[in-house]
Image (cartoon, rainbow, N blue to C red; front, top):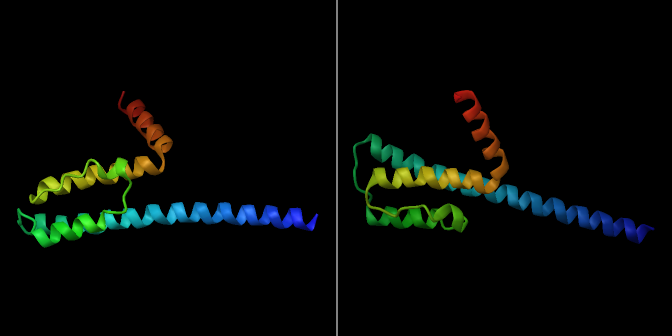
Length: 115
């Protein structure tokens, strides 16, 4: 009886750990995209049109943890606006990757309100 309880507790602890790892991974990836977006928005605000090569490398490193379905829309460009636009697409995919059903429901609700 005690052994079964210990096994059940161990399984629940493992499930909680996996859930927390998944949740924290999402927030790390979201924070990475936010930092890059913030910097690119500052450059855009200041009228800078091109991204220096060293910054482009840092951006690629910051986004390296993102899952393939999210990062595949990223356009590694030396143009601030093009890279900024692609990062908004990356972030949108990140939210869809995290919870595809929730976003589908929100889009259905938006369509209902517009109709």
